[in-house]
Image 1 (cartoon, rainbow, N blue to C red):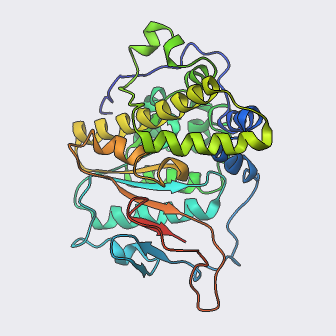
Image 2 (cartoon, rainbow, N blue to C red; image 1 turned 135 degrees about the horizontal axis):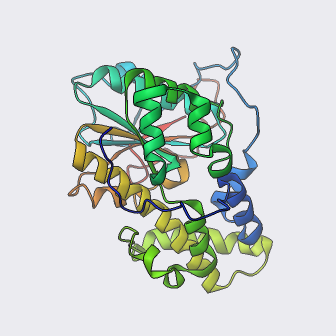
Length: 329
């Protein structure tokens, strides 16, 4: 397999990896962040797509055109109208099988339309998992072996069969490289508790550049934290700063890995990551953009909604282009 960039291949020395789902629960308990609260509240085991799910109640809102599109990625992603950017980000609410289903449809549509290689960047795997991912895609295709070799239950914790496994099988069958994007959760947790300045120097030197100066990004996070603090108790400035540094490290790490991959190997990449990392451009998308010489990733954010009698989403007002390219209702 092609050797992937070695930067921040960390995690081997952490004996007690923190489960992603448990990390979100502990975060919610400690400070009640909106992101953590939403994701953990939705973490329902065993949820699956049934034959009764009504996929006719789907619409894509194109924020640049300002109108709704049919939710038909195979028609929208044709050879003559593919995203210019080498990176297409598509969000998810981690336990949602419907979100994973639309991710699968998007990946398969792009794979059929593209004449260049397609890779899949994955928040749910660490960079240190890359060898196991390559063995799965290019050699054995055994889902259980992949789960065992990457400690799926300990490092991610969400139901493997809620849609992830279907995407992984497709990647193996079509030989689409799966690329681990995430920084090991124990490192993110160290930052959450103690801040970046207190990390050991050997870890700091292995991390990507981290930009903490984006005012709109911090202000939105700070507002969410303080709003939740009114419910869960006072949150001091140091706690907010540490949590913000952890979130930013998380997003910078994924942005670094995704942009480095397409820079080194070419082609396009679909990035699968939590919707909250993608639903504003000043989050992960702009961190990718600065590493792609100003080319923004194409972003798709799924959003569950109620529907009106005309088959349109019940939303207060359409989102603008500062949030994402497509909102998939």
